[in-house]
Image 1 (tube, rainbow, N blue to C red):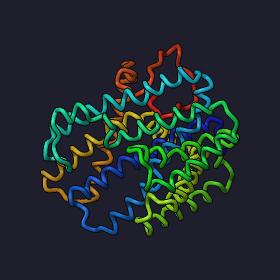
Image 2 (cartoon, one colour):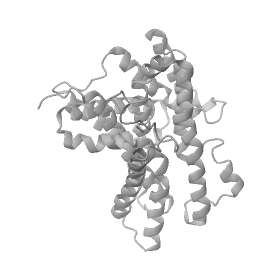
Image 3 (cartoon, rainbow, N blue to C red):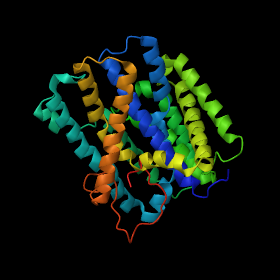
Length: 350
């Protein structure tokens, strides 16, 4: 097989697509445990650790890949406004949508019902899945300050972020632990782009080697689930993220387009899937429980599909109607203005 010249964009979108499926599966898995449907505690912990070792660090890593290009192209102040539009705005409106669902669902969910006041204040501070949007906004804002600086400065911040990670137990500022947990992954993406090796993973043997490294990290996680959130897990998470992306890049460069395109599409729709997936997957779990269906495979399959498909359809419809921007799910482009462009800093929405 030959290596395609567009594999850079393909692998980034495909990595996001794989990531958003794992995010959805992870929430289905935890939801089933919260509902008391998983009786095998070791199984739950092993699968949970394997997913949470790297699936969100993956998004921070790929978000760093093209971030500096975006800042240099738009300028620091305009790029800040873009981040408000693509990160804080969807955080606000989709937090309220989620809070509205929690009110309507009442005691049917795995959590206590919330009041109207709690629903109004739901985005302050960000709750549930929306920590990601707030944290990415904070990280990108910080990174924009040295986007035009020397690589040495980025390396210094990367090293300092690891030191902060070790001090998490005494970190005094609530919610900032999400920033310190993921800043280094984001900067790893920035540094990879600065190194000129954005198309890593295209060597003949790089894919199998990357896959073996990834599997090794996953095996470690399943046997050391109690260490998640510690420095060893952080290191294995970084290796898992890099090796996973290297393998995806290898596959995207060599596999038929028909295989890569669907996952790449999910990557472009990932922000829409991310902000919408919790409601439908929870609804499916509730319906299956009411019907007396307790089969884990059925719950996992239907829950994951329910979490992914509605968000993807919403993305397609809003894109067709040029309404993505209104719902905080991307930027609408006219046909005359459409042209290939590098992926943006956040999970791809357009």
